[in-house]
Amino acid sequence: MEVDSGLIKRDKYSILLPTYNERENLPIIIWLIIKYLDESGVDYEVIIIDDGSPDGTSEVARQLQKLYGSSKIVLRPREMKLGLGTAYIHGIQQASGNFIIIMDADLSHHPKFIPEFIKLQLKYDYDIVSGTRYKGSGGVYGWDFKRKLISRGANFLTQLMLRPGVSDLTGSFRLYKKEVLEKLILSCVSKGYVFQMEMIIRARQFDYSIGEVPISFVDRVYGESKLGGSEIVQFAKALLYLFATT
Ligand SMILES: Nc1nc2c(ncn2[C@@H]2O[C@H](COP(=O)(O)OP(=O)(O)O[C@H]3O[C@H](CO)[C@@H](O)[C@H](O)[C@@H]3O)[C@@H](O)[C@H]2O)c(=O)[nH]1
Image 1 (cartoon, rainbow, N blue to C red):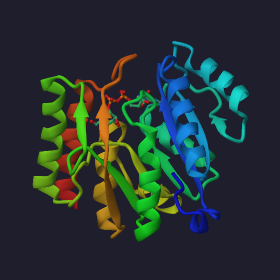
Image 2: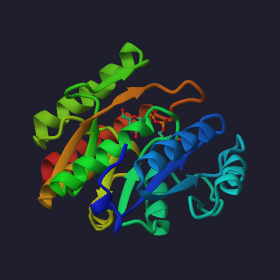
Image 3: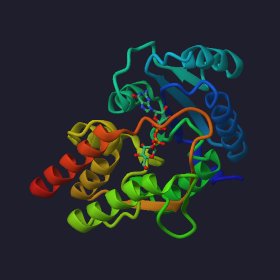
């Protein structure tokens, strides 16, 4: 799909892929990103931010860089596990694009949606385009009842308490103008998964425009989610903090 050959020439998209134990998923997600973005004709790079995964993800990443070239695949120098929030910050520091796309590396987020994000951003000049599982044709596939309840509950409570007017607050598949993401990251206090929700709340504070693209979220086939009880506690604390301070 051609996105818009007139407008996109000046733009570059940096796709941030945080990884922790994604050895099996990484070659597939990279292949899919390259397929869909080469077809759409945009200029892009993929930045793999691995946290010293013990399963050898970084070795797979190095092989992929050799295969596709270092202008397309950028790697963060080897790090110990510093967490998702820090991974995003390191990714942005390495990004040479004027737009940043954040997505999971575990095949939950299909790269076929990226050209839709780009098209919507170009049409309305949105500061952020957020993937939504909870609007229009969006959906979640493969989660058990408990996980669906956690996600729905987190979204419902946040809508009720903070009224951000964005349908999916906990998802992480998003496109940002780079300067917008830099400002948001500096203003966010949360670490871990809850960070995604705070980004939207802060974006509303700064009056950034946000568009939404319905996406299908498919639970990973290989590997395990890193969401645990501590992330849920962190979410609840952050929600109360934001409710009290915004
Ligand atoms: N570098 C790095 N990457 C990490 C870390 N923890 C997780 N990741 C990477 O971040 C992505 C998402 O991690 P998962 O642990 O698989 O997330 P999930 O449970 O499927 O949760 C998804 O849905 C949530 C909302 O329902 C989202 O909040 C979350 O961001 C993610 O999209 C994957 O690419 C994973 O390898 C970390 O500490 N460091």
